[in-house]
Image (cartoon, rainbow, N blue to C red; front, side, top):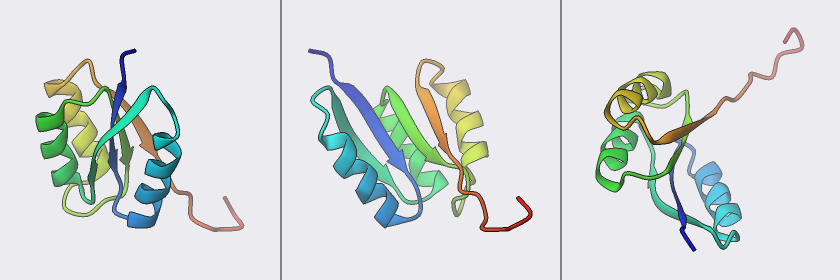
Length: 92
């Protein structure tokens, strides 16, 4: 069985740990790394070359959009799942 290799990138450790717990329950998924900021996400993606990057758009040092743009150029076969948190606003 081929494992799906996943890198998690979010500056909120609770969210990263929760996603890791959920993904670790799947037999065909392996979480290969975690990143807490955009620069770390880009660096780890280059080193680990995961199949999927789960990426928060709003992160320190380098935002998720810029990280995704760079990685799609450098690692075009890697898939990116973007996490977006909406503000709690009654007008949204």
